[in-house]
Image 1 (cartoon, rainbow, N blue to C red):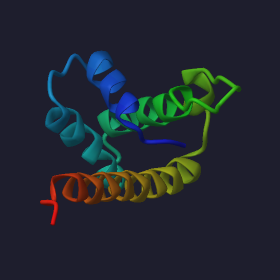
Image 2: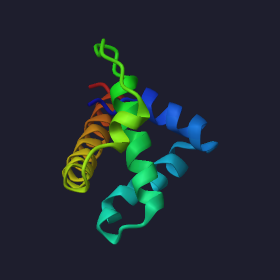
Image 3: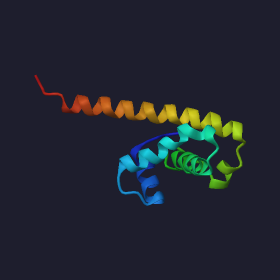
Image 4: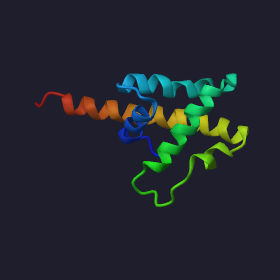
Length: 105
């Protein structure tokens, strides 16, 4: 799975959201998957689907139904791993931005 900017741009288009913070707010719902709210599963399905489908090195394409057919236990594990992966991707992005903005000596 890959959590590049492309994934979040596509999710914004799919969810009809205009800003990255809006998309991230919706993505953050996966951290509440244990509540069993169906909206969270929809977010998880779409996030998982897009992270695989948007990855440039992925030659195997999946259908949303492939994701929907995973067991609840598999989804719980995926949600936790995806939340960690997203946090790590954004931490790396922030570090890169800080390096780019650092004044030259």
